[in-house]
Image 1 (cartoon, rainbow, N blue to C red):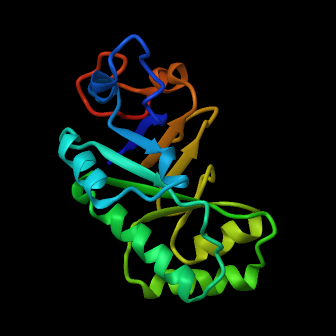
Image 2: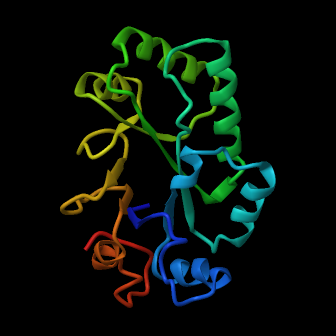
Length: 195
């Protein structure tokens, strides 16, 4: 796959274009986007199907995990996580990664149980965890990635100072930074490859 490059969100980009044309312009430059709105609200099925339908071939949407997840095992947590991941799965071939932002005060033992619960849901995906080093270690041991860590099954990078060789996702807060690393934005003919 190579390292896909994009931005965190796209609706704020290209303010001179009408809202209906912004995604089209974005997809001319990048082949992935992280959707920050999923942190605040899980998209309904209709929204997910619309995202999937308008994605050009090879395009990927990554989600931020919802803020209401506690990362402590339990029935309510299981239902919320399953609902979210099933929505993400509806993206089909347009499905990218998921970034989980872990609370700083999360207990390692509870998180280890939560990771077991995640595995039991049998909804595999490209999951990356962002938290303290000890929590990220547990995620790596479970076969997932850690955000901005140069190890794991794939990369999930947020505002990296440089791009390593490998596969995964690199998302930037600023359009200028993403453009610098995107082959498509540089006028290339291949999907985003590490420069």
